Image (tube, rainbow over all chains, first blue to last red; front, side, top):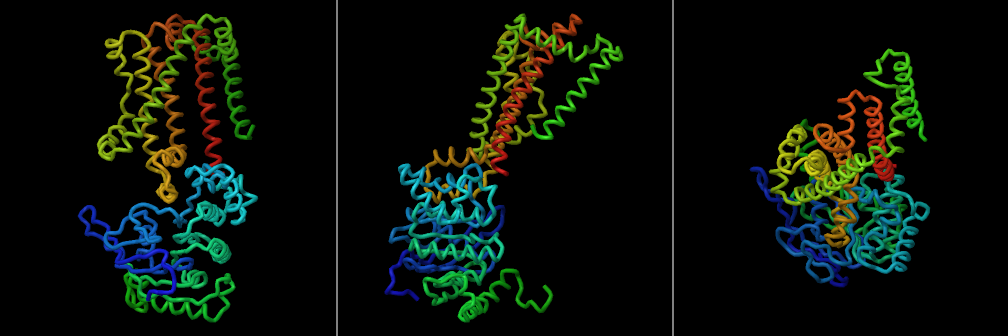
Length: 274
Length: 249
């Protein structure tokens, strides 16, 4: 239910995405309809079964693709097929440029925008330090671990000073311990920048640990089934997993998503053979 | 030098020594092969005497023209084919089968059209070198990871910046392969046409020496040619290795 007291940062109304059929195959109804308000400065995660359209939703919100129907607004301006100024995106795949050093990767967007050299240096030095990459500024991505490369991508987005950051399963390829620590980094970034964050993830515990609200998405075509407020304080970190409420949030998410996840793998009862 | 470099050096020196011994012991007749030391001495003599300066200059200019035209033409052809889906789908199968066509068969026809000068030789060399460059350009551009292009879009960069700051660097390993092949094929194209029919050039002088049983000059020129080709390849290899190491360190 919309919260009238909070400023809406991005609004999604009746959005659907249908991929046209190719080679005689029928069209694929991938998403929606979806209605969602993202409030300014909140941390919202979307969880759902594989192939439910989470990443498609993020691409629509980012302006990387156009919805088949419905409207998307960011800061009260329509988003359609072009990434709006003020929106930063971090992808699931490692997207660091292997031909650039860490420092040059991070400064990539600023140089293209024509920001002056002194300002580039100030922002990049800050972002590189903030993400704990100070000792690796002159290294190439191939010399870094997967987690560090993902931090390079986050730093590259951070220097643009986005007001809304969209993250598409950025920690999917990392081990559990690194993911928890990267989650802490992300919370620190969120608190210090004040940006609105939308995180797409398939990990229920990650969503429950990091978010102010968690939206559960159905199997394809993805629709929002329920949005669960976690009630965490803003200064939380990964130790929130010790809180009894953490278990309750995760359990609630699994209750909603278990049936949807079975639908996604084409099963209705796991006790019977497929 | 790396241990692989040392191993390569040992293999080359050992092969040259074995050949030297076999030639000096008359196991291999001088009419077939002269000792490598004499080949080197002949190559040095050709180089310092300046007796074939005009032929060397003629061949090097032809090779330079062929390389520039093959690389630039191949790159632009590849870029055009990649950029227009209709062209890509219709022309690419031709390019893929082109490697089975020996361009040298068109040499007589080109001599009839342009005369016995450098033009038909450069055209044949470009026919050798352009297609591998074009194919590698298409391959390189096709294999750019889509997420790199998405990063470009999220940073709202212009098409110009996307091409020069993302697409070309991302395709660079393939472009380097294309350049290496274009250079090698340009050398082959120029020398082989000079060898078949030409009034000047290193290939022509090798053929002339061969016809006159002048093995010393012939092998001297062959060594000189090998030196030029090796130098070109080693330079390209050095730069491409440096770039690839950066990518996959």
